[in-house]
Length: 186
View 1 (cartoon, rainbow, N blue to C red):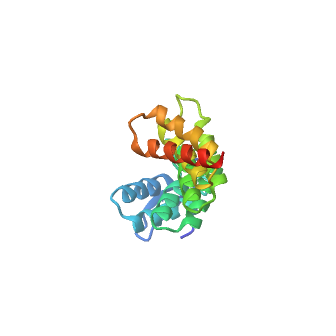
View 2: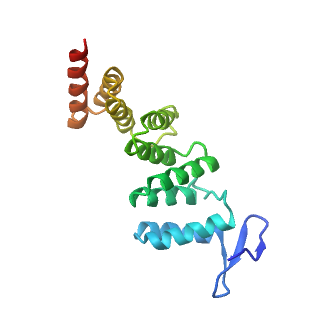
View 3: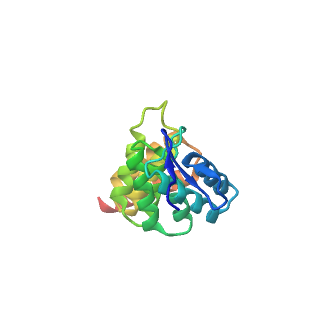
């Protein structure tokens, strides 16, 4: 459905029931569907937002592309998830959730260098702005280095994760594995 007219602040469309819906209203509907969970409803609503305004960004910073990326990721459509997360980042370059989402997808796709770059970008955010716990970000970087068998860097980042969460068994296991592999290599 094509937009009927443009409101000074955003585009507006007429639905089949002749009700006017703004991109903001479609976005809220999509977000509600996402949290139900009603993936089909969320996708339809978020796609309407993009039709009305491809650069739409909710006042809280969320974008429809983030939600479409998350849905694609959960459904295993990884290439499509990367596209949506990347588009979300084009609208909002410091979107922490989209960087983490894309980094996670890159990890699964074994594109470890790209994953590390995204996670390190989030680590570069000021503490007061970053919402993700450091221990998770350190571990994500360490895990990507572990998969690359870059044991020195895996150990460094694994120790950072372990220092941030000393009782975490996954962090301990990664540090042990990296340490053992470094000893074997020397």
